[in-house]
Length: 192
Image (tube, rainbow, N blue to C red; front, side):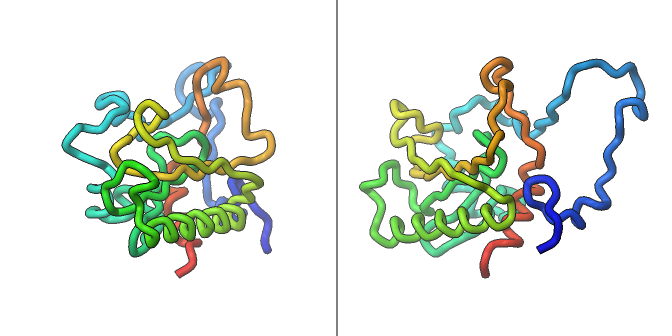
């Protein structure tokens, strides 16, 4: 296996990535770091709650995978990047059927959610050297579900030293890879 670069991408994939230092750019450098997160504009303009008549987990599978960040599809469920991730590589596993609670899922849905979760964990360990995961389901708005009407399981990858003071002091998380780029990388690595 070749040398690995950022987030487990093979080093050769990063060879052509050009990085500019601040002295090459217009303006006066300062001590501030900038976090470019254009995907959050939807959250800023529309708020956290989806429109009541539109479920993104129902509508998403009707669109192209790249457009809605779907990593993999099964017969009863699919894997999608979380648009508002807790950590880089945060995935959601959702049944296609619009159900709110785990006890409403069929045996086939439960089995496929489990299998897709296992596959996602294997792919992320192989591709991004993930060393731990948080898995969970928040069911119902009172339990913290952002989209309470459609069941979804969170898969949050963890690495040593991935936590720092940013979330606590500045209420900010740094994400070194754009969602679309990471989605493409994981989808290409997903077993066919």
